[in-house]
Image 1 (cartoon, rainbow, N blue to C red):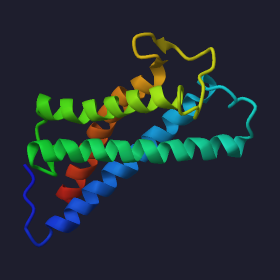
Image 2 (image 1 turned 90 degrees about the horizontal axis):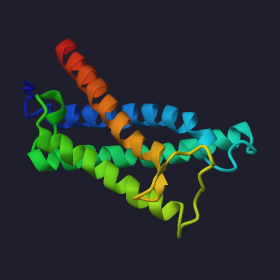
Image 3 (image 1 turned 45 degrees about the vertical axis):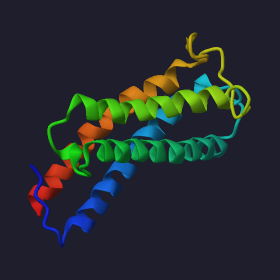
Image 4 (image 1 turned 180 degrees about the vertical axis):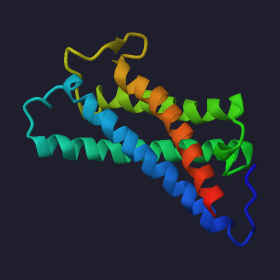
Length: 160
């Protein structure tokens, strides 16, 4: 259980927000770099162009993850939900937001938005007409994120 005095609540909330966003950025950046071969045109791009494209995508990923965390917090009316025992309903909101945003954005980006195309290596999700790796990203990374942030946040609280 996390007990935070009213005078420290804003500062502790900000630290947790920074942890969620920065750990998300770190994890998503590695995923983005690992899936480079699954997108068209990336093999021909310069190293720094690929790094820049992946960094831009990662900013979006981290913002989506932070929004999903915040909506989970609104759902349970507790900003510190990550530090407590997780409820299936909270996890469903948290994971569902990321998945829904990803499905909509990937569908648009590879269709009408013309933002990117998949290479022949990308496994397809036929019913959704999107790549399997971006969808898997929003299952694997958010789960890794909540475990990592819970561990970091509780460790930070104990050290205080």
